[in-house]
Image 1 (cartoon, rainbow, N blue to C red):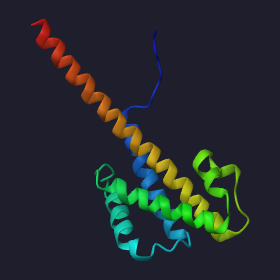
Image 2 (image 1 turned 180 degrees about the horizontal axis):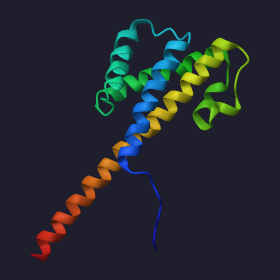
Image 3 (image 1 turned 135 degrees about the vertical axis):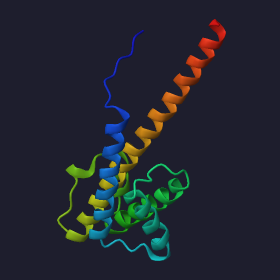
Image 4 (image 1 turned 180 degrees about the vertical axis):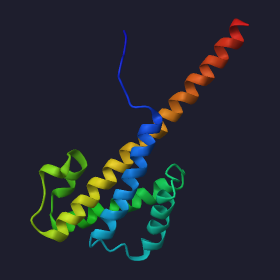
Length: 142
């Protein structure tokens, strides 16, 4: 069985993730989401993203926290919308209420960023695995 899939190179995906991090920051700034006591932690994470530091492990928990807050805000204002957000691209489920729409856009920017970020991490892991396999193969054949 042959699996072929054309994927953008890792640099293209990483650049897209950086651009998505900027869009995430803008969407957060434009949303009415109240981060409460988590604001400093989330803002620090976004500053790191803006500086190009998108792949620190410790940021995963903060991304989860932001995701939880966005989903809770959507659920509080639109009961049942959480399931749509988790299973669909919400661009087809926009709101007329400007504040709610801003939160929905924040959700989409977060979803896109997390996908791109994870794609880069997966590509790096795959490269390490292939490199290790090649080293083992060379050592065995020597």
